[in-house]
Length: 441
Ligand code: AMP
Image 1: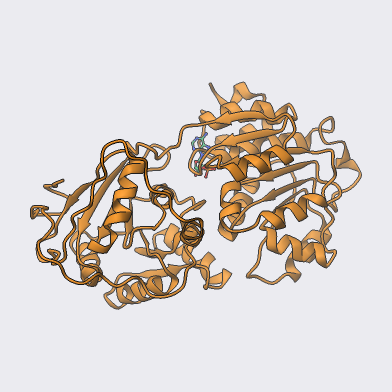
Image 2 (image 1 turned 90 degrees about the vertical axis):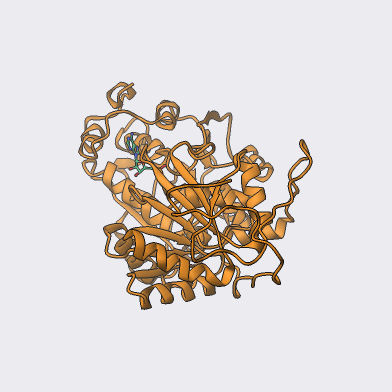
């Protein structure tokens, strides 16, 4: 199937062509006809599947068609489309897509999110916009100040709905939805259909079409997973060694905490690796700049908490390093989803200390495979790495809900957990001559 088969307008096809895309991705093929037809939609699709264009393109088309958007000649001062997203970064990315695909439509769009001044947003909205992309908190600020009018919204998009729950936005979303016209089109995108997402879908969507595309990273054929076993207190030196030995560029490094990210970023900078940290304590300007510099290749490393794990769209990111494993195994999938995108291959390298063996075991269960492990000469772990293997067929242990929330937002404060006291043995992994050469299970 080609884009031309989807019945999109000439203006949109031109913009798509300018991006060099010819073939719609599976979620685009499935979702676009339903959205064009005006139906509600429930889509199970992760970031990286092309889901943004899957809703942006038909929305633009409906807005420019007087039959599907009769208001267009009457008013531009109130947005006709509202896209709710969980993070500032995602808001900026969705806006970029709206502007890219809508380049020849003359439609006006704006993203409103916190961490930046509210007045420029108010002024832009006064001049009139068609599409508003917003994080829930800042949108509620605007509603409180009566600086936004949502009474003309004809389409609502809830993007990354599961992430909205993880971040505790559900009450905000319900408050926002109360302010929308009852008659509207509703589109919900989520990477998972957890029970709470289903319940929201049930209350918001009306007779929705269902679209489900494969998780891009589930079996991760495109991504090479590797673990290097190393003691916690040697991880920084090992990471520096890897940067120096391989001349790495554009590496996204994940830490569990803001504090840990800052400390690691500083260490890398001091060693001459151009680095920035990306987490929730950074100002929005600093976050935007860090991301732009990383994307353009000015920075060799971006050290991030899990807030950066979802939604970030960085073309051809060759490598993700887990400096620390996440507590919630699903976050591993989201982290490595930043690499191996759009058919490119990628490498997910995890530095794993003995106190992370439970997290590693849970991740392997989720991936349904063991991850190849190696030991770097000169960085041999002194602490044991033996992972208790469960009896075959035993279901994975459930994490307490609070641990899931804290880890998935990545915004838990405090220092990384120290390694556990020394135990005997080196964990049975044989030494490897080179991390990317011989590997051992
Ligand atoms: P998303 O899932 O929306 O985050 O999109 C992931 C990436 O795929 C983005 O860089 C898009 O620009 C890109 N993309 C979207 N649609 C297509 C397509 N039909 N062909 C190739 N790349 C695409």
